[in-house]
Length: 83
Image (cartoon, rainbow, N blue to C red):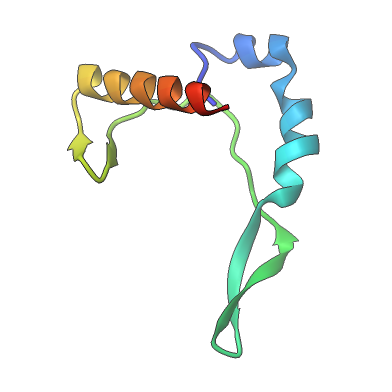
């Protein structure tokens, strides 16, 4: 999720929703008998304000501020149309 600052997700109470709905479904992966299996340990989730320094997909790697912002907006717009 992307927010402009740390106050916005706190006001929206995203931590509680993330902890309840998403985090229990995230697992690291271990190899067992040559096959990937979910780790019994919970996955670590980092919360904070992070700067995107690059983004990419199969169409390219975007390293400038404008290109990264355009990539994020296009991805969000496409995902919102699918839901």
